[in-house]
Image (cartoon, rainbow, N blue to C red; front, side, top):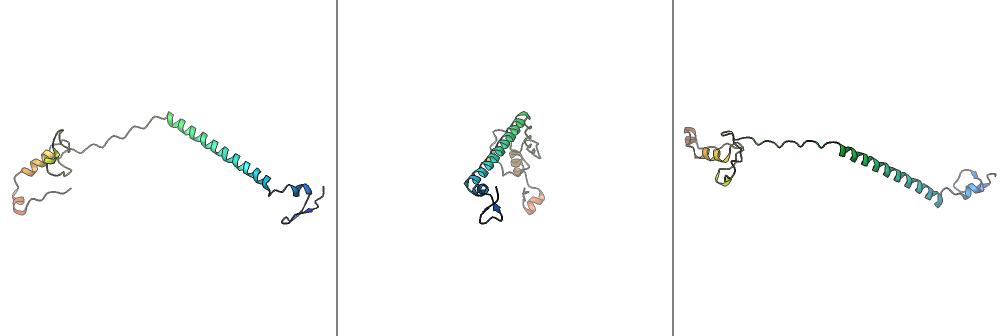
Length: 127
């Protein structure tokens, strides 16, 4: 069949069946849409399989050991816990300094001042 059909916007002559099978019509769009839909479905299925394989691998690996809790530093004076013994009333002790337990802080507060402290005033160490 000779190319005897001229379509506006095309740079060549076409045969009548080619001109009637317009590649820019709804049929071509539906074909492209179906191809894109198949590609999306294949990609989704591939991702689903990868995730399932990843979950399976994680299920087989042993859980990592938990990190040990940091140990509280002991009191500098008595080497006991800084929080004090169980049942001790923390409100009756001087404020925490991060270095001594409540009983040691109370003892230090009740000591007699040194000569320097008596002459120049008692200065408490900050944190």
